[in-house]
Structures are given as structure tokens and as C-alpha cells.
Amino acid sequence: MVVFAAATGLRPSELFALEQRDIDRALGVVYVRRAYANGRLKHTKTRLSTRAVPLQAVALAALDRLPPSQSSLLFPNARGRHIDFRSFGRRHWQTAQVAAGIEPLRHLYDLRHTYATFALRAGVSVFAVSRFMGSSIAMIDRHYGHLARDSREHAVSLLDALAVERAVDAGWTSHQIHAKQVSNSDSTPRRKRSRRAVDVRWTPGRPTVVAFAKKRS
Image (cartoon, rainbow, N blue to C red; front, side, top):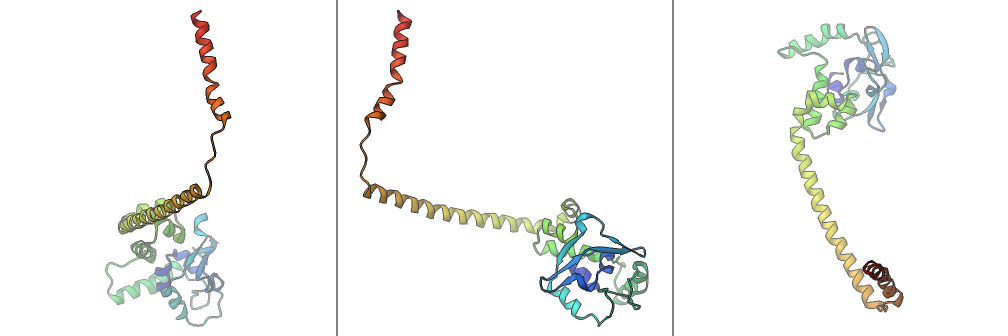
């Protein structure tokens, strides 16, 4: 469960509320539809929190290592019910950190920060990270924006590549148009200028002369 949490960025309350049916291996996503906190099953924190989070290989591998269970919950406790946040943190999470020599002790919620850090460092856009984490872009940028500094260079390289591609396309297109115009001029004889075109250009000048003559007289 801990590895799955770090690989998906779910809130602990969302993690504890997951059910078997929320995993779609065909599409490679986990659907976040509810949360469990303070002994109650409720809706997700915000409208953005209801979402589909892509499952990377490490998350799928963590699911494969889960022991068989008759519970409908994805991560049930020993009695097949929802995990209590405080009880899990005190009995399991802190104990595991002490055994691993981790100092200072981290909160379970820090796994969500781990996900954001890895995602931004990997070049995932702030917009995509905000969607996967169920948070606003402003919040992601405020707390993790400094981690996306490497993506600026990546963005510049993409824009430069696009500019070169468009320049090549523009050169190819103008060459094709030029060739087509030459072909048309060779195959189609020029038409003589019609007398109507000459009359149209000459006509506007006549009222001007008359008006000038009237003014002098």
C-alpha cells in the first residue's frame, strides 16, 4: 500500500476508501471516487478530487504483491474493514520508519509529496500533475513549482523543435506553390485586358474635372 501511495499521489483518506472495482487494468488507471476519514465514508475533498489516476509499472507491481482477500476493499485491515488513519500511523507507519532508521519521522501524507516531486522531475506538466492529484494548478505551482525548473529547458527545446519544423514545412509549401504558378503561366495563355476595365478606371476622373470646372466658374 505504501508503494502504491507513492506511485499514485492519493490522499490517505482516498487510499483507504479504494475498492477492488476502482482498478481498471485494461485502461491502466485507478478511479478515485470516495474518501474514508474519521470513521466515515464520504465524497472526495473537492470536485477536482474525483478523477482517474494513471497506474505506472511500480503501482501495478505493488498491486500484484497484495495477498488474496475476500474484502471489496483494495487495502482492508486485518478484519476486512477500512483502515483507521491514526491507528495505522501509530502501529505500522511509524514503527516501519523507526526500523528503517528514517529520521525525522515522516507523515503518511508525505508520500503524496513524493509523487508530485517525482512527476515534476520526470517532466510531467504542472497541468497534468494537478489533474492526477486532484488539486488546482495554483496549489501545485505554489508548493511544487520550484521542482519544475528542469521542465522549462524541456519546454524551450520543444518550442525550438516546433519552430524548425514549421520553417521546414513553410519552405516546402512555398516551393510547391511557386511550381504550381509557373505551370499555370506556361499552360494558360494570358487574356487581353478588357476595355471595360479601362473605362472603369477612367470614369472616376470625369466627375472630378467637372466639379473643378464648376468651382472656377
